[in-house]
Image (cartoon, rainbow over all chains, first blue to last red; front, side, top):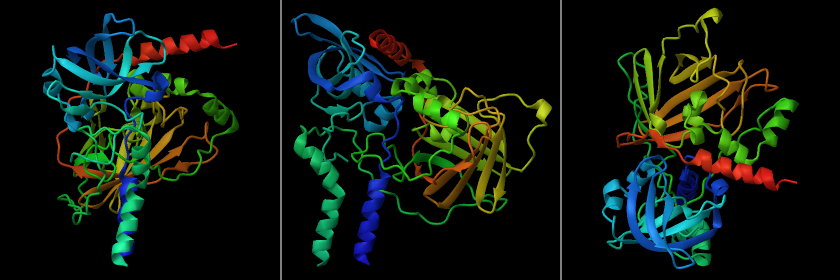
Length: 140
Length: 270
């Protein structure tokens, strides 16, 4: 009886995950095989929909400082995950690290972001888990 | 024995995630969601006329909160194949993933229509029912519809006009609210590239089996596109305790980016 209840619970947990279509499919526009950590200064937060954006001045492979654009999820998902406007905006003019995957169409310095390490050290999820890097330890 | 069974169950539950954890770098970022289903919560409330009250803030899935960043992969319910007529099947299968993106209402920030408020919407719903009326708000681009639930007939054919949500009327069949829609604008999709004709007839069913759960099913009749009607599996939504947030589509960069990609693919095509 208890085993049956347990199996039912497991199945419910598995069925429970409806990670929801976002505004659109990530993989069409961005390349999950070209992701990297970008360190730079957060210059601006555009907290809008269907996607929010953050802009970071970071160094390109040639060592030049350029403005990089990171597409985040929607403000609905960001707020519910804790990445509020205030949380992101608090790191403007400070150093952040962003995990970003490059745009497929070759637009310079355009990425989709999966997480951002803010100036206070908080790591905040801001996009889809295209690399499968978010683990089993849950913060809540 | 009980302990052993428990351990096996826990391993079974976490196995897919564990496999990822071994192969990929691990990031413990705030925002990830563990999908724990809500309990039933007791009987569904009823309105003054005795019908089930469907009112509430409803999240897709069983957790009563947003699941966009669930740590477990999506499990889709089994459904029959769409019974397309041969010409429609060929057209549907000809769509590339990029075509689907560029034709999507959510990418273009255009109305999702009926049944798109349920089938093409990952965000939270607010439903308010009162005797004779069904009010449906979705967070996704602040869309809404209001439907009379007194079983009134559709408008006369000469009075119909194509509308994204269609000409809608609803009735109660026991504890199930049945919403009947016709005259739906042909620019909408049922979901994921499933186009339709001006003869589309959508029958949606909503029921609240317990306090914490809402269930949704829809039937598509489209004699110009399908060989027979098609009915979806029941989808589960669950009761949340958050307000809807403002969500206007004011900064859509994706259409231009995707068009640029489409142009590049045309140039490289032999």
